[in-house]
Each structure stands twice: as C-alpha cells, then as structure tokens.
Image 1 (cartoon, rainbow, N blue to C red):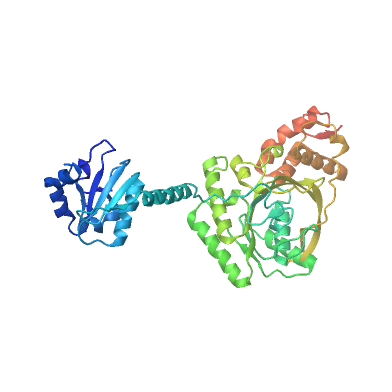
Image 2 (tube, rainbow, N blue to C red; image 1 turned 90 degrees about the vertical axis):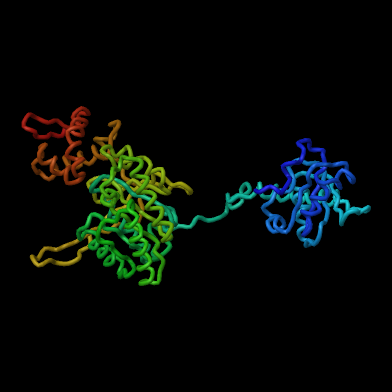
Length: 469
C-alpha cells in the first residue's frame, strides 16, 4: 500500500499528533503550515500529511497515518466529497487512532470531535474482523443432528448410492455372475434378495471380452421374463487412470441417460486387472490414480461404481494389490464357491457407513439359451436371489486349521474325481485347479497339496496318483 505524502516525517513517538490536510487545496495549506503556521497554531514544525486530488482519487489504497498513532487533527482544505471525509475517519480508526478532531478551516475554534465516531468505527471493524476470522467452508453439524437421515442406496444393504464398491474372489468363483445379477435387478428396478433397488440405467464394462456377459444377461431375461433395454455393455476395457478414458466414460454415461431417459445408477468395471491400463496393482501411486479416475466418473455421473476384482494367492488375505484400493471403498464383498460350485457364499468384508449384511449363500441355476449350429444346447447360469445359510465345510476338513478356499476347492476336485471313478493324479488335478484359479492355481498347487498331505487327508505315491485317506 502506498504511503501518503509526508507520512514518513511523523515522529516515531506515537503520542505526537498527526496533522492531515485534505481537499483540493491540501498541498498549499500544507506548505503554509510547514512554513510557520504550524508552529504558530500547534507549536508543530513537522511537515503535515496532505491529501490532494491525486491522493483522494486513490484513497482506498493509501496509508494516511502510521499504525498505533494515538491522535490526529484533520483540516478541510478546499473542496472534498463528504464520503471521502468518512473514508479518512475509517482509516484513522483502523490505524488505532483514539482521539481526532475535524477542522473546517483555519481558524476553526469549534472543531468536530471524532472521538466517539472513531470508537464506533473501531467496534464495527473489530466485529467485521472477528466475523472474517470465523468464515470457513467446512460443513458443521451439532451432536446427533442428522442421525435419522436415511442412507441413499443403489441396492439396499449392499451398494450405497454414488459409492465405490467391489466384489472380489478367486478365478472361477462366479464373481461376474453376481455382478450381472445385481446389474439386471437394478436395470429392471426389481428387488434383489428382498432388498430394494434404485432402478435406472446400467453400464457394464466387459473388460475381459467374450460372449459370457451377454449370455448371462440373456439367461436372467429368460428366467425373469423381462427384456432389459437400459443395460448397456461397453465392449472393451476402460482405463480410469487415463484422463481421456475418464471423459469417454462420462460422455457414454450421458449418452445412455439421453437414450433411456433414466439416470445411470450403476457402472460395473469387470475386472480391475483388465481396466488397470498396464499399471502395477501393487503400487500405491498407480492404484491411487485408478481410484481418482473412478471418483471422477462417480462424481460426474452420479452412479455407483462396482469393481470386480481378483483375490490374492492366499484368498484369506483379501483382494490382491495395493491396500489403498480397499481403503477407498465404501463397500467390499468376498465371493467364493460353496462346495462343488453350484452355489456362492457372499461375505461382506467392509461397509463404511452402514451395518454389514450377514453372510449368505446363493444358488446358481442353469438356463437354456439356444441350440447352436452343431446341435449343442447352449446355456448359462443365473444367481437365485434367495439367501440361505452357507453349508458347513466337508467333515473331513472341519478340524483343519488355517484352511483356505483354495484348499477346499482342491479337496472338492479330488473328491469329485474319486466319486466318479475318474483318474485322479497330480497332472489332472493341476488341470482342474488351473481352470479354476488360472496361473495362481498352477503356481500354488504344490503348496496346497502338501497341506492336505500333512493333514493326513490324502497321500500321493511316486507316480503322482492321489489317494483319499
């Protein structure tokens, strides 16, 4: 802020009175004061501050007195607008001046006492400063206010509205079948497992490609007798870590909304691995970029994002990759097969702002779709949205500690082959487990077999044949 002319000559001792001339003739009056009038009137030879037309034009950005000056006298010197006189008073008050007088000219034997005026201005300034010091943008509430506010949902008890959620499990655990089931119920506006949905359009990113998802949707349509015209598939991976991909997804959601006349309630990303853009799932920064992209899509579309994800090598330790993903989730579910695979067990492993739904099992039922050109009947599976208690594990495995779903699946494969009289050796079991768990199954098979051998559940001879004990 600029300093008024002669302000620099004020004594440092704050009790010395500041003299100010203001008006069109301020400079001339200041010179007269400096040349003897000041000594004659106030025994003061300090060059007075003057506020001529130039200074008055920039008064808002001008310092007219130093901070902490105790008193001042202001002389009207020529023409000056009343509002500028008020501004001078405000500036004196803000600087801390306690006592001031306004003189209409020289001489003026009855100057206007500004003491009370400055006091009122200081009170107003203090109140404004206090108010400004309390201004903030943080949302505040008191105590239990809002306790009875009901949480919005996409699927009640399972998928909160406008949330980032995930289902994870090993390969072959019917994750996509569950995701399709939720997507179809939300698109149809039909309850799932007795829980209400917020019906609307749905988008499903088929990151792993193929014809599996369309067939699963068709199976649902045949089972429920409904055609879903508001469930749209994105038939390639989408990479939220890339800004241009985020924008494509947002534009596509707007297109779907325009086509259907319905808001997009759910966007399924199947799977995280295929939509990660070649980045490292274990790197917190890469995962952070993925989460940020999902958040932008979620914010701009208003939809819930459901990410289908794989579990790690040990499925008891949760989803694979950086823990930053789980930390960012509003809801997370583990899914695994029950027994031989005709049902799934769904377990909530995180629900941020609501009570976790109880673990439940859901059966899958085959639905015939069509006969292909070779005369083979093509079918798919549909999740029956009728929850039931999960059945206890096989008695042979009941007392084994540190048993994982991987061990249970391995045991089921061995027992199934033995029951059917089929070959049961390490080679064919490796094929079974690789089909279930992919490369993780191939790599983990020896470790899982060794566990069952140590627990005296099976034995393996030198030729690789497996015997149930």
